[in-house]
Amino acid sequence: MKLNTKQEELFFEILRRTGNVTAGAEKTGLKRSQLYHKRKTNEKFRLRWEEAMNEALDHLESQLWSKALGQNERAIMKDNKKTSADEKAEERLAIFLLKAHRPEIFGDVKSRHKAGDVEKIGSPREKLLKKLAAMRK
Image 1 (cartoon, helix red, strand yellow):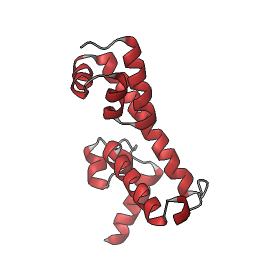
Image 2 (spheres, rainbow, N blue to C red):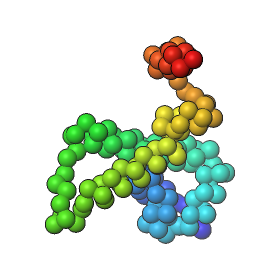
Image 3 (tube, one colour):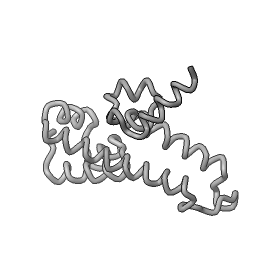
Image 4 (cartoon, rainbow, N blue to C red):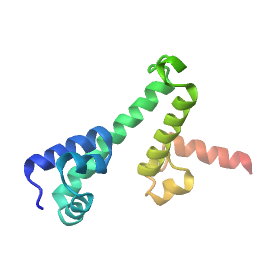
């Protein structure tokens, strides 16, 4: 089965909103293997995939920022079927996803260096880390 333009557009829309390849495959009537094969063999498709995933991750990151700043408060009561434990689990899952997909920003020091460490030498963060390392000595 070959992907048509309509299927591709729907897939990328779902991937942008959810970051979920399986959901995109199901909604388009395609197999995940077909999508992964096209990503592997078609540079334009691969770039669109990366862009859609980056948008999904941006949205996830934005939600966590809002929550951290207290701008995304929801009533958390058992009557609403959502407990504080549920909220904490959602936050941990979101952080896990960001660490997995953006290790250069959210990973531990080792994974940031393995991911190419996009930070500039001499950045304020880098200077602070050097100062802290010197203080430890």
